[in-house]
Length: 249
Image (tube, rainbow, N blue to C red; front, side, top):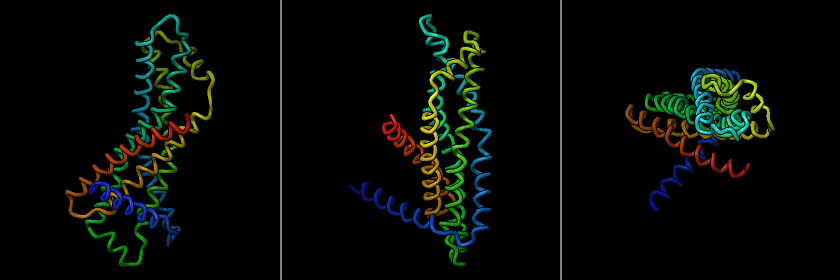
């Protein structure tokens, strides 16, 4: 019962903080400059790790299917078709979001937590600045805008990696792989991935911001709350992954 009470109290604080965060910015020019900065820090700086993981996982997916589904009754296009479905529906929007949770959630929580314990946030509040809007909203907007772009890049890179994996095994021609990718392609799958990614972006940015902004204590708590931000974001992502999958299927 006590755990439920603590959860409801935390959730109430989270809702109130998000309400304050999405109030009208006091200085629009400064606000949009901060959004651009956050896009670079949270989005552009994540491109390399997203591309690297995607190409290797895409290659591994096709290689595993070739090794484990090697049967003459299966047409060769089945490998490209199955890898496309796997990558678009689950791998890129879910696994890459978990990777971004580890990278971006810890950064957001530690940055805001450090600003809290060094009293930078208190100083801004004394000057009359809505710190929730100034510090949190640009991070959430940057994630909502840039994470879908990262997922599109991830899908494309993983599919290219799948072609490389098929060439490495040597039993799947590029023509057959591309034929499978094109077979019965449905744009709704991409929209599904983008919806899931947008939800995940909100989860990562908002939970990490809440953990960092409401931090109490010293430098040790910064590390603890950064870890909590990653763990809680990952758990909530998996819960909503199940919910969204149920709604779309």
